[in-house]
Length: 138
Image (tube, rainbow, N blue to C red):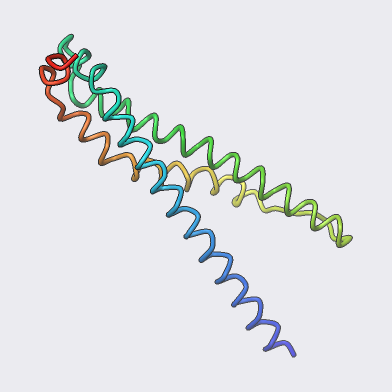
């Protein structure tokens, strides 16, 4: 009986971790897509900033910060939805609701890391943009 319980718990934990990994992957792809579109739509702004003396690293940092902020807000929203679900289910079952502190911290931290990784390519594309091309077409 204990072995079956342990195996079921292990399988459920693996399923939840796989679901979380898929959610992080989808979120990362969404952020990368949003940032890529943002770079394309803001070519004029990037070109103007470059023409006024902004270095590529400053532009890359701006786009990375935007991606990280999107990840942070998404992580907080996911944390709030997950905590609400856990507390609601626990109270409905008559269990004491408990979420470990390290989980509360790890959720937004991991989402910021995934978002920053997803934003690296669009940020480097923005940093390498020529200042003259967008201004010529504007």
